[in-house]
Image (tube, rainbow, N blue to C red; front, side, top):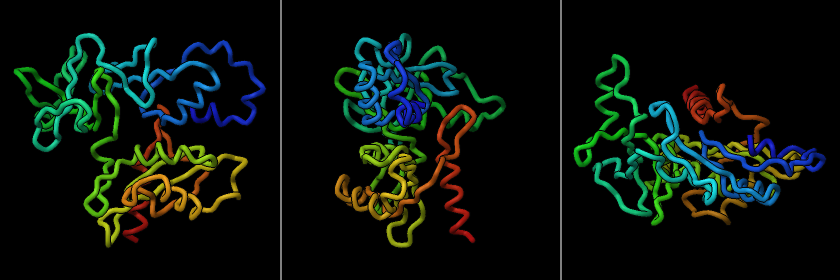
Length: 258
C-alpha cells in the first residue's frame, strides 16, 4: 500500500500533512521506500511482526524510535531468540538465523496435526519456542531485522541468496516501482535469480530487461544479481494484500515442466 501510495502520479495534488504516522507489517518495507515516505511526511514508517500462529504481533518498533527495514523489538512477555536452523544452537547479535518465539499469544498446537506440531517447536532453557521459519538477525540494541523466509532462500552455485535483499537493492533503481525476486532451476548454478519488475508509469518503454540486469550487476555481488528480468503490469496478491511470490514461482516451474 505504501508503494502504491508513493507511486500515485497525483500525490502532489493532495495535502497529506495531517498524516502523523504510517505503519504496518506482513512484508518488509524496502529501506528506499521508507526514506521516500520520510521525505514526504517527515515521519518514520513503524513496522511490526507477527504470524497466524501468534494471533497478534510479537515485535514492534517503538513509535518514538523506529528503525527502517526493521521489525522492531519483542513486545511485553515475548522471548524471541535467533537460532541456527540446522544445529538449533542459539546465535548472538548480528548473526543470521531463524527466529523462535515464546510468549502467551503463541499457539499450543495445530488442530489434529501432532506431527506438524512436533516439528514446529523446540525447547530452550526449559521453555517451549515456536519455530517461525523466518530468517532474521538482531543488533546490539535488541532490534530485530528480517532477512527472508527460510523457504524463499535461493541456492545459486552454493551461495545463499535472499530474495528480499535483492528486492531491496532493486527498489533503488529510479525506474522501478515494485519488484519480486524468485529462484528458478538452472542447469549450471542449481538455481538462479529471476526478478519480476513493475516499472513506474512514466518510465515504461524507456528501459528494457537487459538494462535492469546491467544496473543490478553494478549494485550487488556477482552471485546475487538477477540473471533474468521480466516486466509485468501487476503481481498476484492475496486477499490481505500480500504479494504471492509462491504463485510466480509455481508458474515458472510449470513452464519448465512443459
